[in-house]
Structures are given as C-alpha cells and as structure tokens.
Image (cartoon, rainbow over all chains, first blue to last red; front, side, top):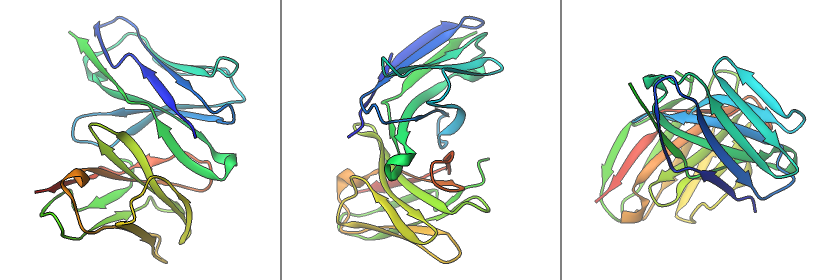
Length: 114
Length: 112
C-alpha cells in the first residue's frame, strides 16, 4: 500500500524567512496530494492541494510543487509569520483506485520565531 | 470552522467499556471518513462511508464499527476498550469521491 515519508520532523525559522517541507510517496498511482495544518487542540485544516495533472500550485504565501517522476512533493511557505507555527501534514491518495483514503506523513512541527 | 461537527469533544472511560463518537458532515457532503491520531501511529484512516454505504476500510480493529445514517451523520462505535485506544478520533467529510476532505475538531478519547 501507499507509504508517505515527510521531512523534516521539526523546523524552526525566523519570521520573514521561507520554510520548505518535503514528502515522498511510494504508490505511483497516487494522484491527489493535500497539505493540512494542525494547530494545538484543533483538527487538520486544508491549506493547499495539488492533483497530478499540474506541477505547481500557489496561493498567496503558500505553494506546492509536485514531481511525479521522482514521486515527491513539497510545501513552500514564504514570508513566514508567527501564526504559521503549527504541525503540517502531507498526504497522498488515489481517488480513482477505489479508495479515497488519505495516507498521511508523520508531520512537521514548524516554529516561526518572532 | 470546517462545518464538520463532532461530539463529544472529550471522553474519559475505563478499559472494557464501549463508547460512541458522533459526526455530522458539512451540509451537502455525502462521504464521511474516520481517522485515528495517536503519537506513535500518526493519522491513520479507519473507514469511509458514502451515502450510507461502506466504501473503504483501513486498519480498523474488529472491536470498532461505524455506520452512516439516512441523514448522513455517522457514528463510530468502539467496544472492549483498551488503554491503547486512547487517541484523537477525527471525522472528515467530502462532497463525493475524490474530493477535498474537511476535518472536524475531533474527539479526544482517554481510556483509563
């Protein structure tokens, strides 16, 4: 089955710097890759997602890139702010494969220092 | 606020007991997913329902069961509880197959 690896597990940056989180997946049939942000005591919140027919997607300070050949995708956050501090999860799924379950990475705890 | 509601927020119970977690999906969403989040296993898919029918199963224990009712709300039943079942349980919903999943605030279960 699908396996998603996420790195790094912790990331500390200064306010205004960029943050990059990387994920690799094992199932070449996966074609949907969402990113979730989870704040303490809350449920995961979708921040951006990408499907396999595009290589990059951007939404203001957040961007995701996908390399299907290498089976990896990355989250880029520019001009980080203290409120970006949270745990970020990548996930992968193959909705056309009969199961829309999300397989998650282990998470990255991002700390943005003022 | 994702529009997905879960009750209760917290649940404390003893080993061997049975509990029921409830989820109401976003208005119009037909799919409901259940996930378990623990420190050692991370976020793990348990089961999915679509318009009342079971759609997919993950690593869900035989002691756990779920159902989706005609009004589309869902319940996750956990029985013969063990200490290791202590975790956060999340419900997510989506409009249909392969669409974005929106997560609820979760139920924190503590088994003593």
